[in-house]
Image (spheres, rainbow, N blue to C red):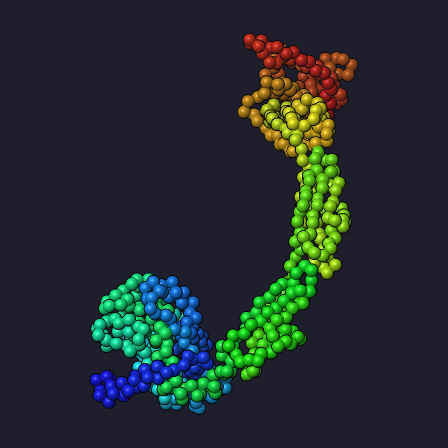
Amino acid sequence: MMGMPAYAEAHQLRLQAVRDAQMFRPPCNDPLLIPVAVHFQNTGIPMNCAIDMALSQIESLNDDFAGTNADISAWQDLQPGIWPGISNGESCIQFCLATLNHPQGFGLAEGDYAITLDQTDGDFDGAWSGYLNFFVYTIGGGTLGYSPLGGNGNGDGVTCDPAYFGSVSCGGNSISAPYNMGRTLTHEVGHYLFLEHPWGGGGCASDDFVDDTPVTDNAQYGCPAGQTIVNCTEAILWPSYMDYCDDACLFMFSEGQVDRMETYVEQNLQSVLNQAVTQCQEAACIGFDISVSVTNESCSGGDGQVSVSTSAGNAPFTFTLGDVEEPVGLFDGLNEGSYSVMVVDDNDCEALSNVTLNRTGPDLQLLLAVDEYCSDAAGLIEVVANEPSSFTFQLTGDTLLNAAGGLFEGLSAGSYAVEASNATGCAGTVPVILVNGSDLGVSVAQRDINCTWFENGQIEVEAYGGTEPYAYTLDGEILSETGVFTTLSAGPHQLQVADVDGCIFEAEYTLGFDYASIGDDCPCMVYIPSAITPDNDGLNDGLEVSASCSITNYELRIFDRWGKEVFRSFDPEAIWNGGVDEAYVRDGLYLFLVSYSWGNEDGAAVTFESRTGTIQVIR
């Protein structure tokens, strides 16, 4: 369009007027509020998603223009190392998504956001004069967005592809890196407010007519990430929103760029500024906010504090905390609890905040903890409160003890809690564990049962470190002076060792079975049943002798009650079926005598044993 003489002349006149105005323009103190309307065209995006996208875009614009964007620290880290003569600008231009006095015919009620779906076409709609319009539709061809160079506010606006609008993905539309931070609109709105690309018409002789932007001959792309890039005579200001880098590497306007845009708004967009108050809800309150700091109530009580400060807004202010109203934002003498803070400025703008004051617990110190020794009940706990007020102390444990000074004596081992409180209800707890100290040590050796038919488990205990003599107890009954316990059964056994000072060692040991090798101390056990039932039912029909080892010199004799021998055998495997001389004896009690030898040494039996007993014959 610069090739059209009339347009080029008008552009130069407008540029000169803006540059002249910049020279005498005072700093911008009050916000230059610009109402925004957003028009989605054939995107298929539903209204709830369109609202989220539009709000995220407005938030990004306000952060970027005010220099409050989260990544402004990236600029601060790089400057002045790369750009010593350039500062970022913090613009007073603010944007609001309009909510009041919308044009008729678009179905929008008072309070609705100025967002339309499929009700405009292209990049102009005169019905929306007085707004900065965002036209959102699929552009294609790799174009992210475009804008007139200097907008008029007559229904024109900025056009953006939905894939680069805002920072919210929803409604089937996806925002993705590298253009996912809403900075396509920041760039295009810069054009709308009369900023050119830093390279102007291209080449090192080009000019964007902003004094503090270095000369460059072309755009930068991607993410330079801290590089110094010189393609003419100065380091390129690639972080400027007016370059083409990825969103993540665009994070500032220069002071000259900000001054240019603010001047353009004041000189050329008064129709937009004049309608802001009627189109942006609570426009006079934009930027008005409060910050609240609290000082918690101390343990002494009644000394909590809430301090309130304001940003923006118009004095005088009225500060209210709960039911208390003050002309200054300081409330003291407070107790712990939740409070509602409200500040009203001279424009009746309200700012609210809810705060909670906690109460600081007492500074309690465990001064002394002495363990019990060998059950002597001489444990001791002492707790002090490093507070100006007076405290009482209570000890909880097996018994409840009270002490004015926090000293508790005569304690046994156990878990305790010292509870301290003052008259105003400030309280705290100190947990303490006392143990039963002892120098008594014990070494234990155990042997599992390795005899068949005989329990020969063993636990051997040796005590040391205590005061002799020692008393050894197993399972609460077996006493031993030597610490050796024999003929023990399988299973758990409770061991206790005590010295004469009352020191006690207690532990549980479990014995099992180990038949890998029969113990040398295992006896030979011979089993003879106490009754037989010779009725041919296959159960206990005869007397059968069983032995746990090999036996020799075996002899079994059975007698009736009158001493008459009714059976004799020298074969350990022989079975007496209750008969005599091919006849059966009567039911009744019979005597037996059995003798045998077992064990061997050099091939000869070394142990001879004999037993007598009775056997009952039952038919």
